[in-house]
Length: 574
Image (cartoon, rainbow, N blue to C red; front, side):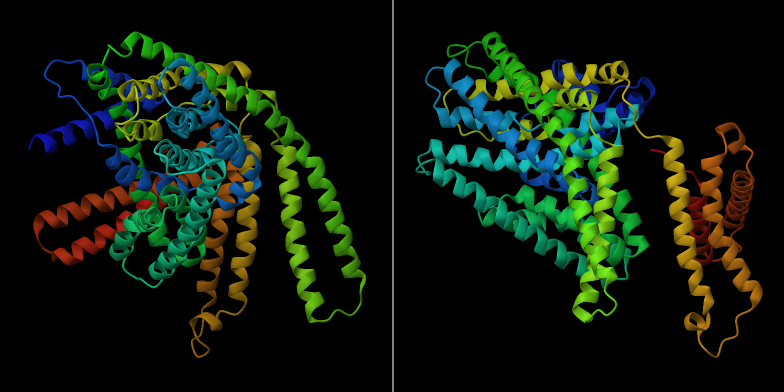
């Protein structure tokens, strides 16, 4: 009963804070941490201490999977260099540097144990940064790098943590063993995640029941996580790989109902788990302070070490990010040279009059590769990072979920164990409150230009033109669809053409008309009138249900039809 009541109160707090954050313009994670800290000191509120395995095994896999299925493979590939640099190399460097610092500051703390804590506090959580960035209009590429970093750095940190704990227990003989253990964990995790992604997508593609499809979707992260962990690999990385594969293949293998269901279900899961963990960070503060043995190190000294470590982490990130951005600015010139060489090779192939089958296939492959390289090159020139982007990237190092869970998984045999946990919490809370609260002001002061709405709308309209042209080709041979012996009325073809072209017309209206004129545009008028008609029909349906003159199954079917139509017409929010 008590657990159920706490769950209801917790969800109510999450929803209330989400609404409040939108109105006051402050990221929900920051408010939740402050609310959690405040609630933890309220008399009568029980002390909270969530077992680390609950978070690492029960919360982290679905949380990362929910983020991974929304990650476009193309964007991830285009930004692979900065993502790998930040999520792997920077995490390792940060863990080693802070480990050395803690080893020097805490007498009796072994170097492997210090590096273990360094691994705990090294991975940033992108949730707060990306929520702020989207609201303030950060460039899409910067958001992609932050999200990609947040997906992979957790796996790096947890594998490094495991190796450091093993080294402290004498299970690893040296640096070579640690590197081999790290490589094994990564390679096996990628294989497991890929296999799970392939198998579950194929199984879901054969199902025609949204309920069964949703049931399988909800267990995919655990299907990837558990085998990888049992094999001694990174379960977190396996979940990320399975999620990215599923998200990429859903467009070609799953039907629209499955994709819509996935989107709603996983957004809900992500909202509850993500925000719930930030609330727990605050709620656990009182219990942490009470568990400190001040004969070893006082709370004040521990917090000071945590703040010093936070400062070191921020400095390391800035020192790393600026050279990385300089490297990224040089990438377009290298990409241009490679694209030019590819174009020359393709031109030589096109000059040949007679091509055999192998050469024809090579020509098609080179044409696709050239188009992709050219698109990558155009993006590099259009959305390249500058010092402003580097500054925001450097300041977006807030810690969160993994730091909270991994800190509590430190072995009880470690010296200063409770102090180490408090240091990790100090880093998480300090970065969230200091960096998170000042990041919006930093973005405004730097005046970083995000998405050009006009250009974005024109690109969308152009895409829908292309889709319309390809779609209308089907109508050139309608008998291939309805059957050779079925006559197709011209009015039917005209109606299909009109409805197919309507999407393009709507997009071009958005691109060419101002917001004021857009309100009075023909398609906006059509939408508003159609929604008014649907509302009148819904009221008539409710009246019919009250009279009891129609069967329940017929009423339910009519309700579903009206809901689908309203969902199509209603503008999306958020």
